[in-house]
Length: 248
Image (cartoon, rainbow, N blue to C red):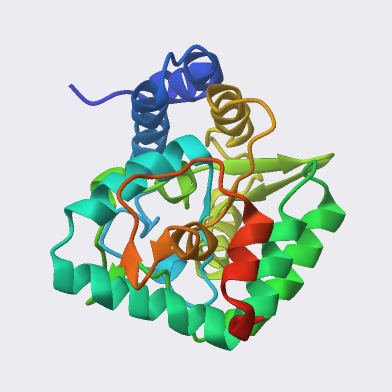
């Protein structure tokens, strides 16, 4: 039976509680996915569940926490050897072309979320306009089942930064939502907020751990031209940079 609009709004408003009570990453991912589906049902014009890959291309820099990267790395190690080598090639290419900018992103991501922080990150992202997420293969995500929380929420969530609220999506989807709101005749948007998911994700990780972009996680796990055997959620990031002096 299809939900009424009021039922969907009620579930969206209470989703933050469900995310806050998630006992592990699997439960949190399920809650994020449920919230995304509620948003897609409310707003059929959203493309993010139709195979669209705009968020994966053109300066895409998925931010991943340590506990999530462990799961991502399961997918990496499950890839055929040739696919792993192709992935290593893409990651090395990124770092050879944009090493300083990638590590500037790494540094900029640390610290509290503020408008100034996101403005600096947005400015830094301009360097990567012709890049795609390293896991995009033939236009599709090669680790879809283990994709990070940010990817699961993209397009269907709102993000609160200080006193401001914005859509957690690409410019094209913002434009489409603006057109929808103009037709609706009000600014009311019934979508879940990303902030409770991020708060819970931070608590599921060990205190003081570092989240960073996928390209940096991957370069930290390459040794001798191969991916190392197991994921390391707490790399020595300074040592990682020193390991590739020709790239920086």
